[in-house]
Image (tube, rainbow, N blue to C red; front, top):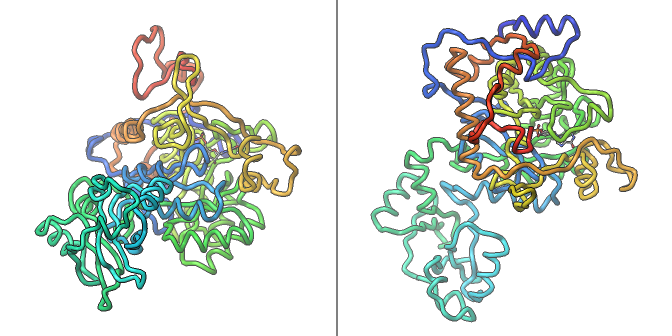
Length: 506
Ligand code: IMP
């Protein structure tokens, strides 16, 4: 049970809503040091996290590249829904196939395919692997073609059978990952196809992936029970959402995120119930900002709830529609309501985070995880190219309710309940802009996670759950706020976790 947080309780009684910069965490006696705290948490009832960080379902934040890297670092990415069902399903498949203990449906080539056609397919689909099992037309396994075979092939008009290797190491269907690892090490083979009694290929192990899983480097990975990276995907409402969920489930997506600007609505709740009736998959529903909405969603079967109306860096909802609630109070109110239920429903605090210190604040207010847009936009792995302006490197970042995003995609219009609206009659609730290029996601997350660890150390808590339960706040004044930032100095050297006005982002 979360203890009552006095500052937030009093504010609640007064009808006063607080946000990140209105509060700071109090320090408390610590036994566990920051490097030993446990960061595990949950995104939804059945889907865990090794770090409590989730990437936003936005077209400038989460596609497969960022989702792969984030899951490798312990979090989870939500693939946005401004994609056709086919494209979104294939993005999910890319994440699921990236690190396969067991590749259940390996991508194969036929022995009479031309080398040139396989190479162009490899390039157009952006495959991150270079070896393929080779089949004859009856689907019997006849060989393997590897990166080396392609590299040393001087004539691309040859057929795959001219360059493939037929010296196959295979194992029977059902071979365990441990046996596969031993066999591949002993025989020095990088690919191990598994075949059934008819000689047909049923699955495959790739040494690189098996080794990762068997060695320490996989300890941080957020993987499902089969050893595949976890990934979530966003859907909207109505019939189209149900079709999307079916296709995404076929690709073994771990979580469905029912992604709308106002989740406490009949259409969203009806869609949630239909999804839960048809599939046994976890559904996180959002967004909301008051406790009564959390109760309605939990009663309708939500496996996780996403909180945030108006805090986003690209969001103009509060200005345009006059609604929304400052985020710390929104999280706390929903957490207090969710606690009334025996079924523990994880809460994700979505939007408004600007610095690593906001992560422990969101968790101490009651969140189990945080969703980030701007803090992950601009990374190497986020969609989009680097642009140069004012002597600096930037990447695009835009709200899904911005004119640009809504004009491009029906899904973005639907998120703001404007699906039927003509393109020149849109009422945007977001803006479009640039964020500084941030470099590799792993370097960026290192700082965010480091800040969270340090915060937990100061608060004297050893786990995310303990931070939720015991973390407590002081109310800030504007004097306290300005004292918190560097002052009385001209900053002359950049810091990897502190941005200044000079870089244009504050
Ligand atoms: P950020 O982390 O502060 O940049 O906020 C990201 C969050 O803002 C997303 O996860 C969405 O919940 C929300 N969001 C995305 N696009 C829009 C928009 O156009 N208007 C309002 N909120 C948005």
